[in-house]
Image (tube, rainbow, N blue to C red; front, side, top):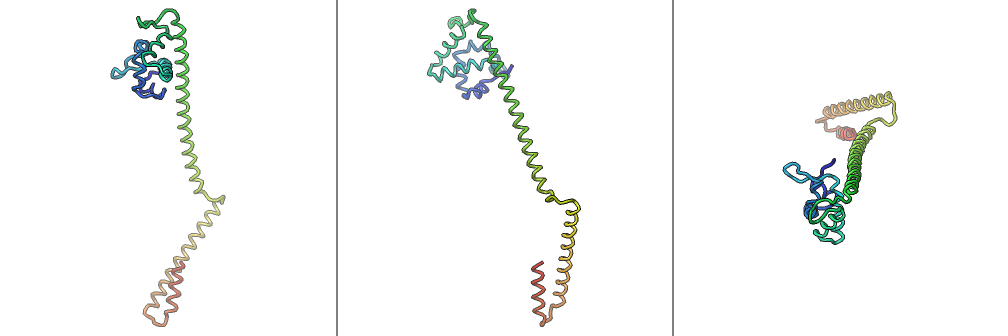
Length: 196
């Protein structure tokens, strides 16, 4: 059996804590059978009390005052307003209805938990999918491992050739330093180095 605080009832009914408490006040004696004291002496309700709160909210939306709401719900529940005790005329019918409502709310709570689990699973799947897609981008474009290895070796070979050529050109440039008639060759070497 789920136990609900004023705040949780407010969340289900889209009401503030004060609005729920105001609905509770004229029906204190009615709610005694559906509530108990929890931690820090706070009042908590059985989930079947939610149906009474819903009815009170509906009546409030229809323009009834809080006192009228209390009387009307007590009449509907066959509770004598003077004695504030349940009538013996139809106690089982109301108890059955509340049990049925409680059962429906329990099913709703279970479905909510299932939905939350499904949402978490979906988020995990989306993360996994994103990771896998990013890793797929790292894979080669349909090339065999031998082709990838060959391309890598060629790339390393070309890099090595560029490095050797650069060293050779720098050496030649150093050799031409201080020679006045080799300006054209110096410019050629500088341009070749820029292209590398």
